[in-house]
Image (tube, rainbow, N blue to C red; front, side, top):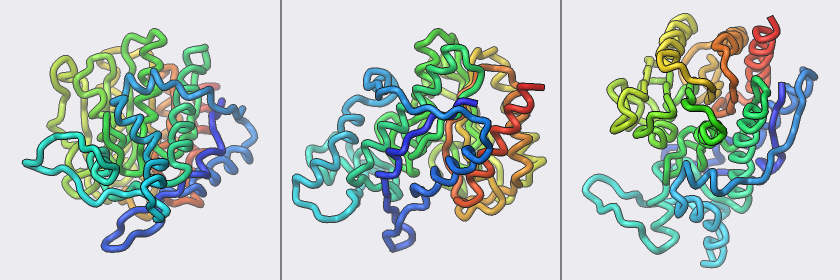
Length: 345
């Protein structure tokens, strides 16, 4: 399998608010490093670097002003004399506030974010830019005739909305891959999100579109992040009505129930006959994930890979969450080996 990756992710170190304390984020560089080592040890993958960042493509997915904000936030933070190692918001527009884009950096940090779990540091933009380019490159490879490509993205992306970052995500890698596939000729693209947390950003980006069909299996947002999107009654709007489906599950969901739900998701995606698939591949459904509460075991990820392969579509697998760091590489490897075995069979 072709694996697209970059070492630039090592430049991104984030902080998050945990209780009343600012702590290093669970989303740390060693996540990607464990994945890279595990896939190198498998020895069956061809590794390539990303093509150049395509700003025009990204602007089709995200608000261009938001992208410019991300690109320039750290230099502005330094120019204003801040000495903290990370730029974070401390106020957000909430109910009954006006939707006005503010002028100051401090206010824009709140305007362009929705959670206190993402800081912007010296290397954040470079890592975010390369992560988006990795997803784009993987989609380009699929457009060129490769049946499946793994985009080893870091930071992840599925929480990133049109114009807001949060949930460790800044640019939406899965949405960027889907947009590349659309621009490359696929009439409709299916996006399947199997991360423990709802892909609120992907839903937001495609909610009023009928050319990308989005389905997410995730923990019930009435009790899990991101709380305010991901409920079962969210079906899309305007032209996108009927093109969005959420399948929330309770904490403690076991593998068999989860795989039954996966069948529902795949059946629903198949209803409209998409011609390409993007998978937001979160591995935080693992039983030992420290911040998630489903109960999949490592053999279940082999099964997941086989089932995704059986869908039979050109596929981009985009890495999202997974915070049992030492096991993450083996779990990713299990998905890829299951996929490859099924496709060869």
